[in-house]
Amino acid sequence: MLNIVLVEPQIPPNTGTIGRLCVNLGATLHLVKPLGFDIDDKAVKRAGLDYWHLVDLVLWESFSDFLEAHPIGVHSHMATTKTDKLYWEASFRKGDYILFGSETKGIDEKVLLAHPEQCITIPMGEGGRSLNLGLSVGIVAYEALRQNYEGFEKITIPNKEAE
Image (cartoon, rainbow, N blue to C red; front, side, top):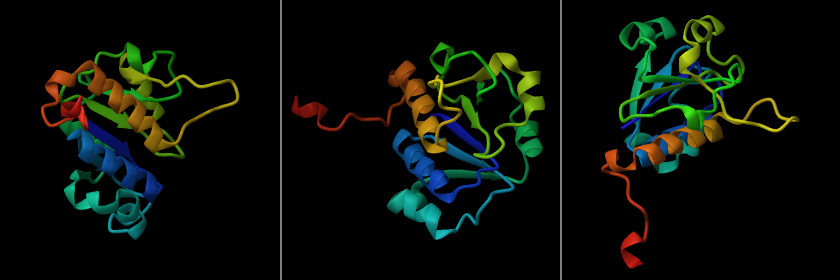
């Protein structure tokens, strides 16, 4: 199991999409307030389709509350454009926390600077400056799955038995 942490997400469809991804990975979704939407917002539910009620969801009142309970350490990875460490260079383990900042601000730069070894990035072409949050979570989360497939008991490959 992974822990996907969205710090102050702003766009409901991104969160809904990430919720659906978490259900399919057996991951826990942590949402850190303030949120840019009501969690009952139909856009979140629409993006998560019929998965939203299956999301293993944890709500945090603030980033400081989250950090108090889960300090940044070796089991943490923070996605940012402010590092050169590529996400596939990280060693992901079952139970790790993968943090993503809001679509507009990212993760607090003070936290990033205090823990540069925990920062990871997704490479982009010269013309790009960022990727959609849902896409970014998917890229990194599936790398964590690739590295630890044997540890994810509930993950199946559709039609694998038919081969």
